[in-house]
Image 1 (cartoon, rainbow, N blue to C red):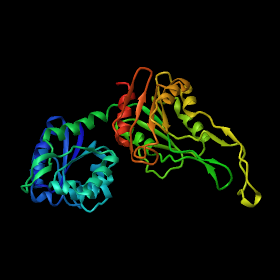
Image 2 (image 1 turned 180 degrees about the vertical axis):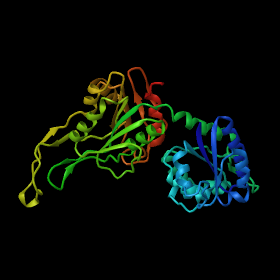
Image 3 (image 1 turned 135 degrees about the horizontal axis):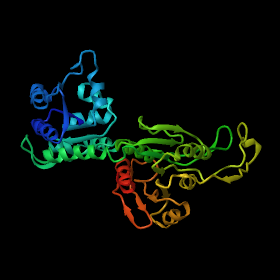
Image 4 (image 1 turned 30 degrees about the horizontal axis):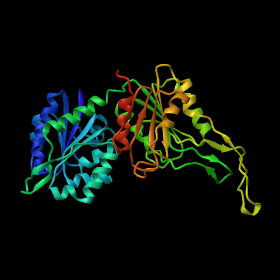
Length: 393
């Protein structure tokens, strides 16, 4: 039985959370409800306790089990957290890491899939801050069940009505179903840039942020996989559930990835590997006073091609092609040259989906099809890519 933590915040629509809880229970879910203090003014904890047969949390100091920290226990035991309705206040808190009540504290302690269903006045929903918070929450992997348009409680008309109960339930059940698709599988991901030292203070590198690799790792974890993330230097926050292997150079990345490839079912070459490295490392620091230096370069190993050769016959290997144009010819050529199952092409000349951006748009090229993802946060593209490349269990 899957466990759903249903977070309920103080919208007039919070009475509909009773129907959400009931429908989830009809679908064989254990439902635990956490109310904000404002929500408890509309619906009582005892109502949800009677409906679900589970304790209901309100205060940050509630402890259904004496001596146990409920926000930690509930976060660890949840298979999904669904916040419905989600007010503007709770959205902004979730986006910015506030933890000033039980629901926000629990949410901050939780690192699994989340469903968020906003409900509020249309002007509040359209407010720039609210929209920025929604984008931030979605970029971190939350599934948004967008509000409907119509008359709202205050008498105004516009987008802000809580989505239909069945839509919220379906979104929650969809996340739970998705969480089983990679159970028992191991996903190996190379991510981020490499750095090839010239001297003790300089190196050759590129603009890769590692965000796409991190999104792939997060999405694979959400689907139940064991994840090995081999990453070059990056400041991107990486998912705690993955096995992290930190490397610096292309050769270090190849060695680390090769040590895991034999046990992998899916292999993604999302790293932006430096094609060249200096032939010699200069000790100390090259100085201008010594004149214009000449740096001889050598070709780095082709990591994804080497992994494709070493991978089990049943594994699927997916390369990335970050190209400065939308032309797919390079991706088609890489498909054959590297011996991979597929190549994910993205046009980095588009600033909105290029290096360091939060969004992406991929075209997956295989031997028998070419299909494009939506332009969306990288976590959405990551889930799309996994759906396109994963064999059914």
